[in-house]
Length: 331
Image 1 (spheres, rainbow, N blue to C red):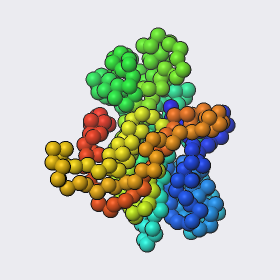
Image 2: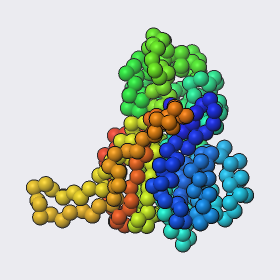
Image 3: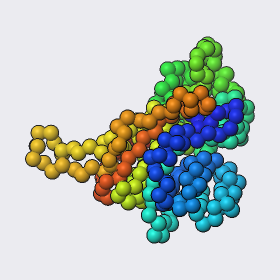
Image 4: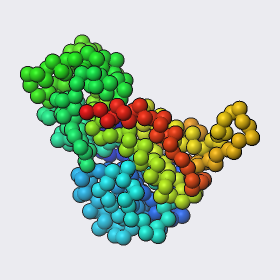
């Protein structure tokens, strides 16, 4: 399970120093923290009194942290209880946004909150709702048919035993409501209690979390909306944790930073303007010292782009991942 945390100690914003060096907050400006969490990135940026933060989070449980920020930083900090796909609902007034930050991991508080049911070590009702949701993991496990469950586990979890796990879920739910511990047991039995580096339930729980929180469409729409609200020269930076997220982020920056002819057989055709300038073609990874301090950071990848053009058609971006969105819409 991806998270910007060390479960045994405290919350650590992953790749904090690297991200700060990219967005250059020393010179002052307004930044949008699309995944406020416990405020690690926001707090570091606000150390400079020339900086302002507009923070978003879909999780209402962060309100205790945001109230402290409002008290400490006054007008330099604003918070919206919104999903980052709703960036276009923010009232920017005349503020020029210098950078938009996405941290796609989960915080220590979220993982430890058993009511959210994000961890396979929890007991009780399956939930996984991060806020502003339409349904829970319990509704998926209780109602989705076998074929669709198989698709969800396979596509979003790359689970080798997706079909067998889905079949067992459908069998068991006839007699009882499947809770977190029951699902873990089902997966263990199907996998014959294999001992691997990752927990047997990791992939299925990842798949459920993705569909419950609409993580694919959220990320796609969030990236597109962030492009529309920053000026030329503004930066979009994303820290991702699993391969699906990184594939989406990589395509977004790489595809729209290249000049592409409408046809390779028509060299005289008009070449589309690039939307981003990439300083780093490859992702920035955590240092060995950071991984040692915070092991979950080992899967983190930081990618960023500098906006170079106000006009960009993201039709191909949406179409590229339409198959994932179709699975996400299964009910």
